[in-house]
Amino acid sequence: MLNNGMHCKVLQLQHRMRPEIAELITPTIYPVLMNHSSVETYPDVKGMLKNVYFVKHNKPEAQDGESSSHSNRHEADFLLALCWYLILQGYDGEDITILTTYSGQMLYLREERSKHLMLHKVRMTVVDNFQGEENKIILLSLVRSNKDANIGFLKTPNRVCVALSRAREGLYIIGNMDNLTERSSSIWGEIKETLVRQEAIGTHLTLIC
Image (cartoon, rainbow, N blue to C red; front, side, top):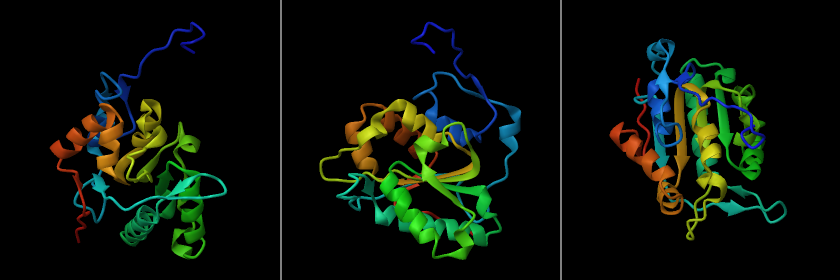
């Protein structure tokens, strides 16, 4: 719309995300983003110490020779187990969406879902297909992890924004933060600083009874 000369108004008041999630994209992507009072009273995610968390790792990605897409089994298996755990805490499968940045990862996730009846109601899709949508809990696999620190379109602000802004109550991300901060100018560096300030980044995710 901007390219066509149409007037656009930047979002300044958001009604979706709990404040900790909104902080990840403010001011990194949105210079100003205020929270509506309704998002201040969301319940904590059941069974989790943190409502927002980034699990960092350095397990390598794989590339599908036929489609040239990417996947990361370590990330997929971690999120599948986390999804199972959240359902055991009482969440309906429809309350959880597993998002990923590559179709190769999505296909692997869906293949694994077909083996487990408990996961059948959990939506698994790529970030680009989830624009304009939201869910109570988002589990996000960033996939890219390689010796060249090639992160593909994860350095693109609008895609990062979509990926990080789909969750209402809980957002759990897994990815190679070292790769992300090495190749994304300031975007992921600022996001990492926010996560560190929130004490919401580490190699392990703490669960509670």
